Image (cartoon, rainbow, N blue to C red):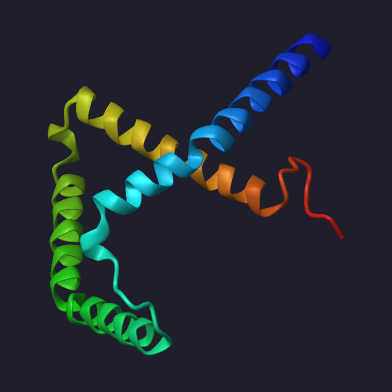
Amino acid sequence: MASKLKQLQSKATLASEFLSKHGTTYYKQLLEQNKQYIQEPATVEKCNELSKQLFYTRLASLPSRNESFWKELNHAKDLWKNRKELHVEQVGIATLFGLECFAWFCAGEIIGRGFTFTGYYV
C-alpha cells in the first residue's frame, strides 16, 4: 500500500510540474482560440448586461423545454403501458442508466460530505 501511495505521489508531482511548465501555454492557446467570446473591456456594466442576457435567454427557452419534458414523459408512459413488448436489450440499457444515475448520486453525496464514507462531520 505504501508503494502505491509513493507511486501516486510521484505521478502527482510530475503532473504538477508539467502544468507549471506548460499551463500558461495552454491558457494562452485556449484564450486565442476563443477570443471571439471575450468581451473587451471587461467592465462591471458589461458583466451585468451579459448576465441579464443569459438569464432572459434561459427564461425564454422555458416553454420549449417544458414541451420537451412533456413529450419525454408521454414517451415514458407509453413504454410503461407497452412494457410487455420491451426487449431485454432495452430493459438492460434502462437498468444500466439507472445504476449510473445512482452511482453519480452516491459520488455527489460522498463529495458533499467532505470525501467521507461514514457520515457528516458534526
